[in-house]
Length: 87
Ligand SMILES: [Zn+2]
Image 1 (cartoon, rainbow, N blue to C red):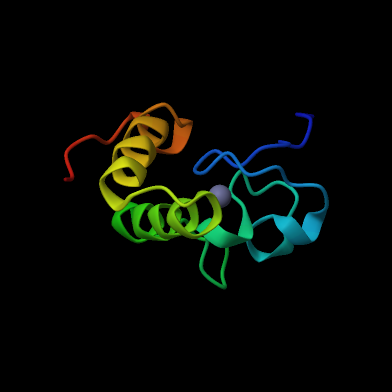
Image 2 (image 1 turned 90 degrees about the vertical axis):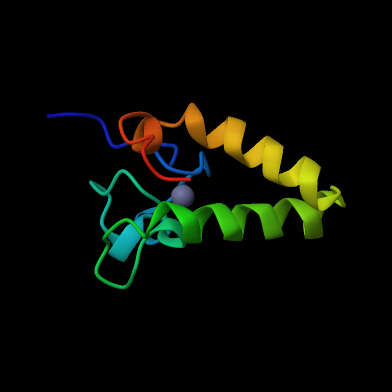
Protein backbone atom coordinates (compact mmCIF):
# COMPACT_ATOMS: atom_id res chain seq x y z
CA UNK A 1 0.00 0.00 0.00
CA UNK A 2 1.29 3.42 -0.94
CA UNK A 3 0.87 6.26 1.43
CA UNK A 4 -1.62 8.84 0.19
CA UNK A 5 -0.01 11.81 -1.49
CA UNK A 6 0.08 15.02 0.48
CA UNK A 7 0.71 17.37 -2.40
CA UNK A 8 -1.00 17.68 -5.74
CA UNK A 9 1.16 16.29 -8.57
CA UNK A 10 -0.03 19.05 -10.83
CA UNK A 11 -0.03 22.30 -8.85
CA UNK A 12 1.68 21.40 -5.57
CA UNK A 13 -1.26 22.33 -3.36
CA UNK A 14 -1.30 20.64 0.01
CA UNK A 15 -4.16 18.17 0.35
CA UNK A 16 -5.22 17.82 3.96
CA UNK A 17 -8.26 15.63 3.60
CA UNK A 18 -10.00 13.40 1.10
CA UNK A 19 -12.19 16.31 0.01
CA UNK A 20 -9.11 18.17 -1.21
CA UNK A 21 -8.35 15.44 -3.74
CA UNK A 22 -9.98 15.23 -7.15
CA UNK A 23 -13.46 13.72 -6.87
CA UNK A 24 -12.92 13.42 -3.11
CA UNK A 25 -10.74 10.32 -3.49
CA UNK A 26 -7.61 10.10 -1.40
CA UNK A 27 -5.81 7.97 -3.97
CA UNK A 28 -6.20 10.70 -6.56
CA UNK A 29 -2.74 12.31 -6.94
CA UNK A 30 -4.31 15.60 -8.04
CA UNK A 31 -6.21 18.20 -6.07
CA UNK A 32 -9.81 19.18 -6.66
CA UNK A 33 -8.75 22.40 -8.42
CA UNK A 34 -6.84 20.46 -11.04
CA UNK A 35 -9.53 17.86 -11.67
CA UNK A 36 -12.95 17.86 -13.24
CA UNK A 37 -15.97 16.51 -11.36
CA UNK A 38 -14.96 12.94 -12.18
CA UNK A 39 -11.47 13.33 -10.80
CA UNK A 40 -9.73 13.52 -14.18
CA UNK A 41 -6.84 15.90 -14.62
CA UNK A 42 -7.87 19.05 -16.49
CA UNK A 43 -5.95 20.16 -19.60
CA UNK A 44 -2.60 21.76 -18.89
CA UNK A 45 -3.57 25.06 -20.51
CA UNK A 46 -6.58 25.43 -18.24
CA UNK A 47 -4.63 24.70 -15.07
CA UNK A 48 -1.88 27.06 -16.19
CA UNK A 49 -4.41 29.84 -16.71
CA UNK A 50 -5.92 29.30 -13.29
CA UNK A 51 -2.53 29.27 -11.59
CA UNK A 52 -1.46 32.45 -13.37
CA UNK A 53 -4.67 34.14 -12.24
CA UNK A 54 -4.09 32.88 -8.72
CA UNK A 55 -0.60 34.37 -8.47
CA UNK A 56 -1.71 37.68 -9.95
CA UNK A 57 -4.60 37.99 -7.51
CA UNK A 58 -2.96 36.59 -4.42
CA UNK A 59 0.59 37.88 -4.73
CA UNK A 60 0.08 40.84 -7.04
CA UNK A 61 2.50 39.47 -9.64
CA UNK A 62 2.62 41.29 -12.96
CA UNK A 63 1.09 39.02 -15.63
CA UNK A 64 4.36 38.21 -17.42
CA UNK A 65 6.09 37.38 -14.14
CA UNK A 66 3.21 35.17 -13.05
CA UNK A 67 3.31 33.33 -16.39
CA UNK A 68 7.06 32.79 -16.16
CA UNK A 69 6.77 31.59 -12.63
CA UNK A 70 3.92 29.18 -13.39
CA UNK A 71 5.65 27.78 -16.50
CA UNK A 72 8.80 27.11 -14.54
CA UNK A 73 6.90 25.68 -11.59
CA UNK A 74 4.72 23.41 -13.73
CA UNK A 75 7.70 22.07 -15.65
CA UNK A 76 8.90 20.57 -12.37
CA UNK A 77 5.63 18.92 -11.41
CA UNK A 78 5.27 15.17 -11.97
CA UNK A 79 2.00 15.62 -13.84
CA UNK A 80 3.59 17.73 -16.56
CA UNK A 81 7.14 16.45 -16.77
CA UNK A 82 6.43 13.83 -19.38
CA UNK A 83 4.43 15.89 -21.82
CA UNK A 84 6.19 19.00 -22.96
CA UNK A 85 4.74 19.02 -26.46
CA UNK A 86 2.10 21.65 -25.72
CA UNK A 87 2.69 25.42 -25.60
ZN1 LIG B 1 -3.68 20.73 -8.06
